[in-house]
Length: 119
Image 1 (cartoon, one colour):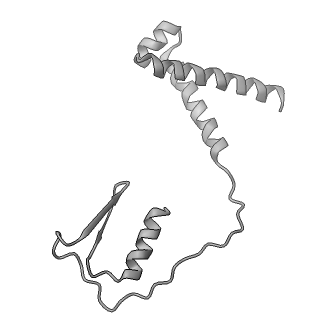
Image 2: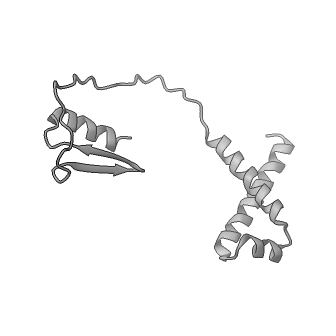
């Protein structure tokens, strides 16, 4: 690691400690910055730089050669909707909702659950 990279890592460590101190203080950014003699713009700039550096470190190249498997499902002739909302199963996850009819074929239901729980 070169000297400038070491210096940058030290700055990031210091900035991360400052941010943790701010979060634990319960103060607003404005008050915390006034107490510590840092301008708000400097505080926000440092946090943007820190987040960007952490995001770049977290981005890893995909090197897996493992094959991707997909389940092949032949659609049934008729899939009825959820006409009677009380008979449907409603699954909500991260803002997305799936309504499942009681007459869904068991293999579709099993595959749907596998996809949801392994997403």
